[in-house]
Length: 372
Image: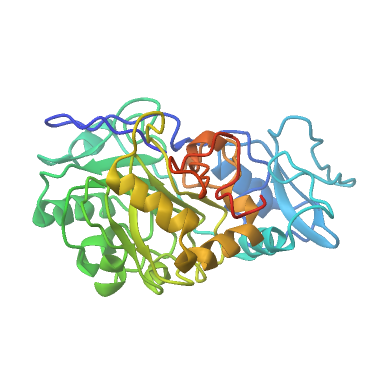
């Protein structure tokens, strides 16, 4: 979701990845659990913490109530004495929704949300966080001198020592701002490295890491309990093992993008992701010209190989994972919100019977062997 342009010393972000909090997401992400009373100060405060107005309890489904904020187009704000059913991210919850998606949404609403205090950070303090190869990105659309969420990066030139030092400086702010982080280059991970930012890290993108393996986190006993988005950008021959995602128990968005390719996924590797709402498998590839050997292997493996029928069956039961999402639909926490994802940026439709592999119907299913 962040677009990278790697220069000698600077990483440029695309504002369409994660942006500052907006008013397009109805249900408060900061409010933990059900919302029992129509007049609920805690619900109102949760909306204020997310820079929204309103704050009333309203029905989600059946007897379940959640905390609603103002700001969703086409909806009515719940009042203190009269409530109106509100849609989840502009989509009315009804009998046609996938039962598996309903379970994911319910778990998400029941999950206790992290608290972000959003204390003031002076521009001087914000600037002083920077090191030689790690910085707080200060473009107004992102962090605006640390006024809202923090958007940071460490370039491939940053050593593990410098990266750990930078994370400590950010953690010592103790300001309670959500953090979106881009971490570049081939490197090792340690529990000590991530500890200072583990309680604010909402989004992590690993980029330019050849032969990246998600097991690097679990092998180092790294646990990022509130991480909601993991992006793997421009990483080739990625390896994924069954228990790797136990390090990210709250993950909602998983993206393999920027021409990333996968070498292997162990069966049932995604089963631990109880809150998962979206996966991007292929983004950034030019499929109009001859496919590179690496991309061809990636597409053949995931979309056509009998050894990965389990993956296609798993996706067939969860079509919502491969559908477009709107701004703020999946993530809204600590000043960060998820961005809109278009269908053409989620996966490459594959025709397994064609020597070209790429399906003629660009709006087709993940695999010709599936009915999606």
